[in-house]
Image (cartoon, rainbow, N blue to C red):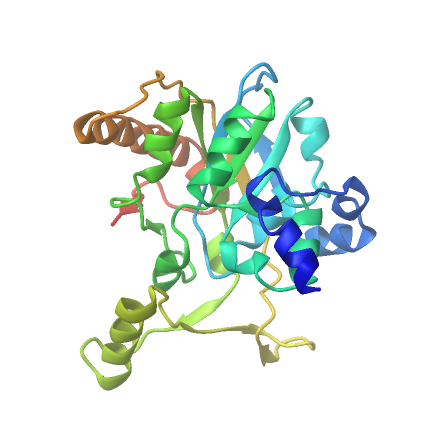
Length: 282
């Protein structure tokens, strides 16, 4: 086993090892129908280029992102013909034997810089790197009705896109934050101070969240059966700049946020969000 891990250690950063049959498991159909999950395309995407698709919000578990891009149950291959999605996730998932094989079989790869560079330079065109930039830090803002995104300090994806000259695609999952409730502890209280200390130490915010149980109206950790619709916006072209300055990165980061806000505002009222509610960027 150790020999195999040593031999195969870099595979998650070299395109992974997807199995189409795993992405099409019938189990995923039940998974998608449970919520249900739906994806809306606003613009055709050419397979002659590569892309970085940025999913928002992370929510507690990023259920919709997994359903759309790590499986084919919602029809990604038909919606975006010629495009190969690579869902990028934490490298820790690839440290555990067998778990890493399963994760890679869905087409997922490491979210490391070397992994992204490989996918954007060594796999031809028609590749879509899928990242959930809010990450675990965004979990603390996830609760029903929330439209808060942890994005101000997340600029690495913009830098990578500039260095490779690839377009950024904003995507917003309406309903993702409605899948769990979260208990918010008194600001400044003992538990809240512990949460902040823990986040500072290990960069993970420990959330007290809950959903439903196995029976109706019961308490548990299953997500609520609430519809989630992911709206995929149009590509935002970026120039290729090998070593972009901080100012250039900040400029295109602002342009990306503007495109995301536009996408959100154009579709929010269709999914129960009031006309006056805005996207909050922290």
